[in-house]
Image 1 (tube, rainbow, N blue to C red):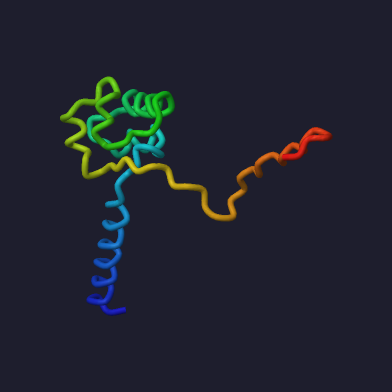
Image 2 (image 1 turned 90 degrees about the vertical axis):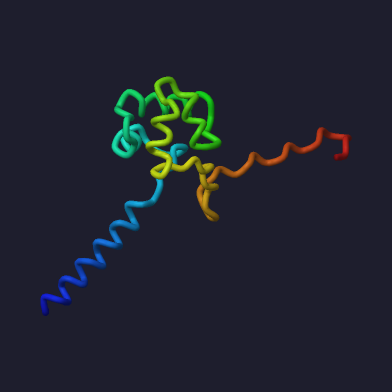
Length: 113
């Protein structure tokens, strides 16, 4: 394979990797490990605090809602704004294995619905 073709392929792969890595991290679904690895100024303890807050108080409605977590202030939010998103959790895909609702109870004898 000619050197110029290899160089071109390497460049294309590099650009593709950059696009994949540019995907923002959803703070409503991310694990503490993902938050720790992705966010600047957030270590293991703060990452765990984010997850605990989300479990206790529900999803973050916006990236700015991270300020409700102790130790996360405006400076940390601004440093990380381009890396994160606060999207609602996606609904279960069609055909997923969600339990069926219980069957309706029959009306007592002598009473019609």
